[in-house]
Length: 355
Image (cartoon, rainbow, N blue to C red):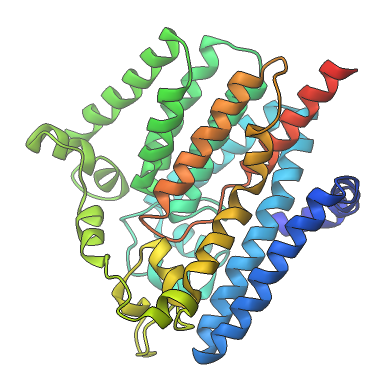
């Protein structure tokens, strides 16, 4: 549904990028090399591999665009982000308890993803356009972005306590941004809120016996039972680290994201590790380009000088970098749209100080 916002913000987005000059030109060169190079390499694979490459490429562009949209909207109406989080939470909770509504939400994601999710009903919650790891990351990072761009207030931290279990019901990977952003953010009161959120999840783990919240609290049950944070998905992922056996694959890839057996939904070489999927598709060079494209705006934030609020903004950018690098050891993920949003927010802060 967010696609309906494009006509209202597209012209402003293009004008903004045009004003960036060389910065934008370099970005377009990188993206063009990634897009064309991957398309050529995919000729040795199947149409499914080419399609997935195009999906990843389009998501790269859309996350930059919608980062621009989020910045523009939140700048004028910060509480709009809270309203969006509240609506998504309601949608996710309804999807957990109503299979018909869950199936309806499947219509807003790709057919391939929908095929997977239709077989795991009761194990994951769905938001409106938010699902699996990407959805969980978006929910948690949205809360921390709201805390960054609005005046401090202890009451606002309660939003994090409420959002954490909801995001965990979408994907347990929500614990990664929760931990990284939470550890990086200063304030004893805020740290107390983090502890409360974890205690709430531990308490919930004693009462739920099935469904998304049972899955969401798995890591906390394991913490109590085995003394360590672990999950079945992480254990299975450990078996997917299979490196290429030829120099050609390292250099140029094999042009494949998916298994040669098209009768099943399988990953090429049996790995869902983000870095390895890229490596097997188009080689080490494309991995490097992918990383640069995704971190392009964040390094623009980190390499800027000092200004009022720069410390908190740069800590947010570093946290986002850490989440991105870590999460791609689990699965192939695009940098969340908040990279663009925080870049523009940092730019606004610098310009205000210089004025």
